[in-house]
Image (cartoon, rainbow, N blue to C red; front, top):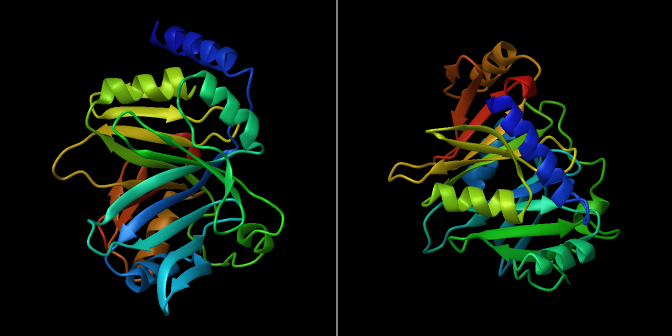
Length: 264
């Protein structure tokens, strides 16, 4: 019965999204960190290279850690603000029709504009005033010009499957993502809900109830979990193992999980 309900939900979500372009996937996840150099060194241990950065007065204001040609982690100094997740940015091949569709859905997206790295960008606010970014990679942008570069041979993973987000009101967040953004429920339980992005990327976000000890998370695809665990340990990282994956913790407390795509 549950499979049938989920199937109907997928059909209805797909139908409701038919008038506008689907998302191509997750473009980046942005974090505020206590020390950009320390956070960058951690991700370099995972085999990910810095593609480029932005600076002001000789100080890094934003570091772009490359996962693959389409996906990045952005690191910002926290300054006086707490460390943690800033936003998830979703990739689109054409932001203008997406902006028009979101306007119809009363999401109040910001106008599409060119951002500092040279790509097009728009922003939507979630039900708890969270930032959701949407980008379109443009020829001549920093991301476009870095195509084929900074793809380390020692990357633990070559694909970011998704991110974990803590929310105060799980039912309201679920309604927002499903009814407004056309994300598709894949798994639901007391610990949260996993939602697949509209489109064929197979990438996801997991919404979890916020708690005092909530930590943001990323989950990556690997072909062999045991091999990933051995590799992570050989790089001097503390590894936690579960039946479906292995994880490490970044210097600011984010949980980085490695699992097989079929296991999610």
